[in-house]
Image (tube, rainbow, N blue to C red; front, side):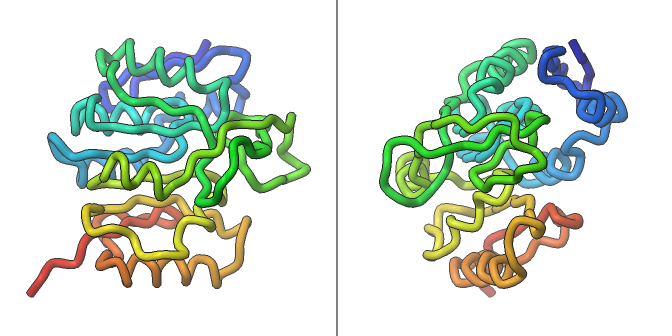
Length: 224
């Protein structure tokens, strides 16, 4: 078992999914550091947050602490991580987050193949022969349905390339801030341009305060 404290939050990762690389990243304190700082900067009490890719539950916990657990909806495709997220939320007195198991798409269908990675953070809808441990069917969750149901003020996503499918149409105006980890090894520069163009058309601009490398923030353009 790997147990660490990050931003006053206790995170525990069971031994069976704690590779040496993952354990080192956690113990060094560098796990999702930029995402955590960005989330703490943009999320306020009462904000509704939609998180795509719950992972260990660290960013989930950051969001729940800032906004209130009842205002957070988190989606995680890897079934192994669902009880880990639940346990980490509980040990930080942040139970109450709505945690959904499934893969985010914007197409119809019940189940979709999910490629589990060697590390819990490597799972993806996009196959990578170097990182696959197994392929499993997981529930398919429509992004547009979750947006309409939860009406988030803040959207956070780290879904290993799955974000490519979510920027074909403008986003609704209730979204005030977006935080994305881009995955340029999984798609072309044209996809990155489409992501930026879609959010600009939605009234969201590049946010210098929450962007760092592949972690890119956007905020709503203020009326002059």
